Image (cartoon, rainbow, N blue to C red):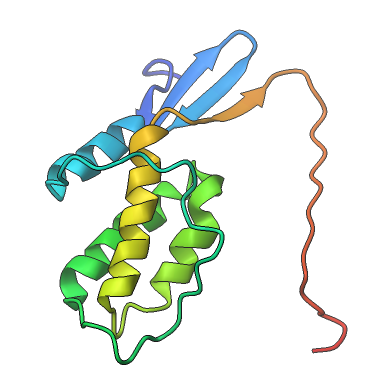
Length: 144
C-alpha cells in the first residue's frame, strides 16, 4: 500500500493521516445508510439508547419483518468498527433478529437518530504517546 500512496479510504473506513496522529471515521458510510434505507427526517437523540429501556422478547408486541430488521442490524454492526459508543445498544438489539417486534425496531431507530446527530465522531490514534488500555468488566470468569 505504501507504493500506491497514502491510505485514505479502506473497506468503508475513512483514514486521515496527520502529523500528530491518525483519525478513523465512517461518516460517509453513515450517510450511505441513511440514503439506502430512505429514512425520513428524524429528531436527533443525545444518546444511542434510553436510560430506562428494558428490551425483552415482547411476545405480545406487534411483529416486525425480519429482513429489514436484519439489514439494519448488519449495517449498525459494521459501524461498530469505528463507533464504540453504539456497541452496547446495537448488540442488545441484535439479540432479537429471530423474532423482532416493533419495540425492537423503535430501539434501532433511536440508534439511528443518535447517529444522525453525531456522524463525524471518530477514533483518534496520536503518534508518539504510550498506549495504556484500561478495561472493566462485570463478568465472573472465576465462578464459571
